[in-house]
Image (cartoon, rainbow, N blue to C red; front, side, top):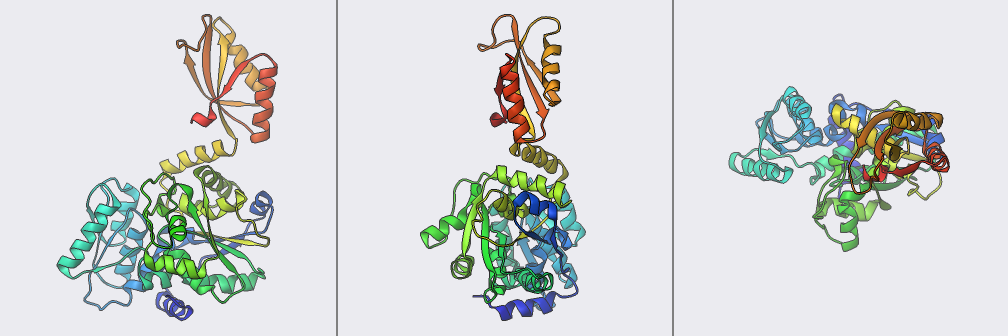
Length: 403
């Protein structure tokens, strides 16, 4: 088990390279959540995520003649690349064939050689381990390593100081959970503090929750979540042991809650956070943190592709009731569409997309089914507008759930 002393040693080892990221409080988040919310902004860390902490602590202890090898689709790849370059060691990172181009370019820019090694991360892990066995290179695991866990735990040390400086009383520290390395390290650092540590998983890949229930590492077969950074099919025996001993509870959140949290962070905190880093706030907003007192959300990273961010914003706005997709049956005659659009405008709905359907078993002769995508001011406005349109005699179907 990783101890507080291990984390303290790691902090000394990575000092001067890793940033002491801010712990911030935004009153806009307090207002939305209905409680004090603090954010540990690891999305402002070097490489854009917490991963540099563990990778550097692991690699900095290697002999100067070492080579390192790793496998990752994103944040771990960049962290290993920067850590190896900082330590003057060569690194090879195996990535999936469909890895994000910006992340591949960033990994190369940090100094690593990138190799495409198959369609999945599992293929890349197999290739990386094989290379390590063949060449004597050191395989740097993303979470199943005491040195990596201790490095991630330095977030907890910073939190101890920052919460004391800010006068934050006993708090619930919410930590994203994928393989479990981050939550294990943070929990080790906070084990003797008055603060409780909870883990937060994506419901579409809740392998830690399943493993806790079974009392052993469990591999989930189906993965379906926008939080790809924590979509880990199984924790390790090492991380499971830490979570069992040190973490008070692990909760899950669905993609709708994650999407909403991303939008709230953008609008209220002016902070760009990847889906994995948004799961702590998602848990708060979804009401699953059913204990009193302040919460601290560890925003684990902010490496999100720009095109994906656009989709995530749309997803989050839909989940929060600010995007509405509806079908309106319109008379198929001149002025019919104009009347429909005016009816939407009268209810304060801003039209951002229109699609006509002139044929279909559900479209009566003499009518046209028109799909509108509109912006609303929120769930209450959406519900009032739908009710008013129906009262006025329009045949309206809410299609938002089909998006």
